[in-house]
Length: 329
Ligand code: SF4
Image (tube, rainbow, N blue to C red):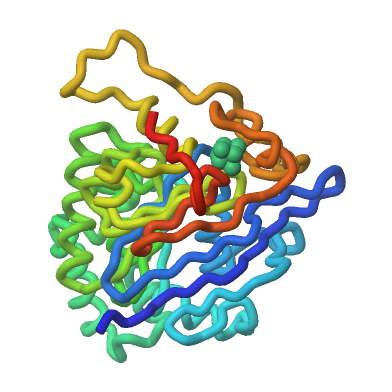
């Protein structure tokens, strides 16, 4: 039987500044089993990174607030954990890879010292030689020669730096890896190498992963499940097959697929989604997508749709449910 690792229920997250209240995450439910990979997809500002930072409890202090909801990680409620508990959970149970390897590494420490720091913090290895041996092993695992542990981050290329960031994240073999656009800052060939490496390590270590991305191609290659986010809500979830091959979709998902080129079809023009993501300080009433939706009805302007689920495929749209018509075009 699949073992549940992460269960997010009715999560609301806000950022409070002097000038505004930003509604970043608005009542999401999400779950993940051990060893599974979930692609979290959406435009910039959809709330993907805020969701990941909430799981890590790394929201900016006093500004980012979890207003409501629970995050159960390996049976522990992250929203109620103390900071001391979180320090133990981070690294050992959950780790995060950030978008830009340039800013994730400390420029004045050798890469070996940065990997060793994580191992020492979690007291995984007792003696210095044991730590050194594990650093060598991890560098080999991500395809870097162990003797390079004495080098500083600036002595590595962008792709190598991202391998080191992955090595640090996986040093304590966490149960869950949050990868926030891990390949966006890399060029295409290096992107493919880093993704292949992450897939291989994930399989070897049975690590579950949430891959945050706006790239549907990366999701198709890497993930078991997909969750599409829009304006802080999850508007569609399903298996990769349901999202990529099924014919029933949320109009926003239809728009996302229409805005990427299809090599099998002759297309003169792509069809981007009209309009912009709503201002998170002033979200529209009803369905958050109604200002951009080609199927908008009167009810959509006032009533937020409830999730409609069939065979584990969830769509949040008034077009679905009893006597509704699917949006497939
Ligand atoms: Fe469009 Fe209405 Fe569905 Fe929202 S609920 S996506 S506005 S059809």
